[in-house]
Amino acid sequence: MKNSVVIVGGGTAGWLTAGIIAARHYSKNSPTQKTEIILVESPDVKNLGVGEGTWPTMRDTLRQIGLSEREFISCCDGSFKQASKFIGWSEGQGEHYYHPFTAPSGYGSVSMAEHWSATNKESDFESWVCAQGIICEKNLAPKLPQMPEYAFSLNYGYHLNAGKFVKMLHQHCVEKLGVKYIQGHVEQVLSAENDDISGIVLSNGHHITGDLFIDCSGFSAILIGKHYQIPFESKQNILFNDTALAVQVEHATNEVPIASCTVATAQKSGWVWDIALPNRRGIGHVFSSDFTSVEQAEEALFSYIKHDPLLASQQITPRIIKFNPGHRSTFWHKNCVAIGVSAGFVEPLEATALVLIEKSAEWLSQQLPKDRKAMTVLAKRFNNLTLQRWHEIIDFLKLHYVLTNRTDSEYWRTHQQVESIPESLQEALELWRTQAPGVYETNQRFELFSSASKQYVLYGMGFMTEPMSLNQKEVSLIKRIRNETLHNTEKLLSGLPTNRQFLSRILHK
Ligand SMILES: Cc1cc2nc3c(=O)[nH]c(=O)nc-3n(C[C@H](O)[C@H](O)[C@H](O)COP(=O)(O)OP(=O)(O)OC[C@H]3O[C@@H](n4cnc5c(N)ncnc54)[C@H](O)[C@@H]3O)c2cc1C
Image 1 (cartoon, rainbow, N blue to C red):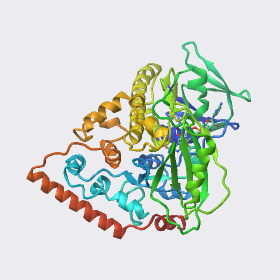
Image 2: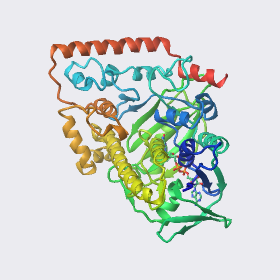
Image 3: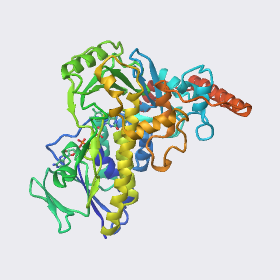
Image 4: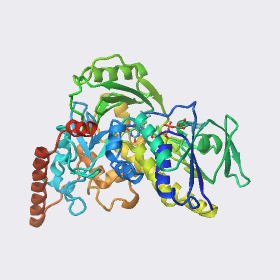
């Protein structure tokens, strides 16, 4: 069967999905075998244009679709992201912890987490087991300039300009990967006898047929929602945030340091994200409209910006984005798969949206159905896996809230109420009191968050696992690993350039 894949939507989800599938299935030199990929985008519905923090997975995605790192960084005002820094989540007093992309030293061979609990805690968990938080404090790059593209000293993802990212992907997919682009607003969906989608009709009357339809139409969810009426499961009872105020603010000068991490600063009824690019910062307040008003949230955002001397003073008008946190009950129905915001969206804490797009598109690309029967089986598997991933995301994001000691607002107090905590997370927390999350925690092949990530958040928030009693052999092993971490940290501190130095070299080449 000649596969023809129709993607509806030209936001980040649409173009990443097109690129990932095309990189595997489009062959310029063998037109008879090729999978035809068509992307349809409405001229009337703007894409989200936010989503500026990625995971390290993006390095593989870019490489796989054939983009050079230099091209990506210069086209998209890219910078490096090595971690998330959480400020004020535990006490609301300006304290912080890091969730870095590099796993703790000894991860997989020895549980440093339990040993850390058993020591006299000479330092916080993250800097006891990892160099990355200290590197981020100094705004250093994760690699040396002479290293090959995508290689690293410390694991990293990116910060990027979302609008420019979409433009770059669009151009690359069309010019290099054979994706056919059609501008048009999908107005009608045509059904086959078996209830599959047989085609879509654009507002200019143009018909497009296909074998597989991918809904990347964002909040419109034109195929999975409007056409198939697949229920949306709201998770607002767990993750309360439902509104974002987003702004872009210039640096005070073009010399100011570029942070190497996303900074997430807790507020009374939500949190503020702060993402530094070479030329500006993207800042926004995500909050719950059940606990505060837009005016109060704006005030908190302006106060955050006003008190930062590294930002230029300027008139800014936040853009308001409302969302219902949650996901579809099914993601692949008949011959239609939803990827991106059409499938679901929750607050951008830990930047889980783009990684889920990458992982979903990669799975689909690897397992693109060869016939209609295969599609039914694959749909079932995709649905199970994606639902499991959503549960994982929801539990992990909620973990950031439940361990707080903050009682200064109704928002934080309600987050700690047991009724708002999924049972799966309650169970896990019970277990983690006696043993640290370890490599046996989940089916690692498809997990999104490793146990390392869980350890960083748990111990960063002050959670306690019962200390292990250590024998002499373990004591010396830990001492050795600890010395290696210290040595590695010193070496990186003295060798790595700053983010700005590294990026300037790329941008001025
Ligand atoms: C405030 C905020 C901050 C975020 N931060 C992050 C982050 O740091 N990291 C991260 O990973 N993610 C983040 N996200 C999520 C990220 O922005 C999205 O996952 C990403 O932009 C993908 O969106 P999309 O392509 O699914 O939808 P959209 O960008 O909305 O694109 C939808 C597309 O569908 C098209 N369309 C709609 N209706 C029709 C129709 N009838 N016919 C034809 N075409 C149609 C539109 O024209 C558009 O091209 C954030 C989201 C928000 C709201």
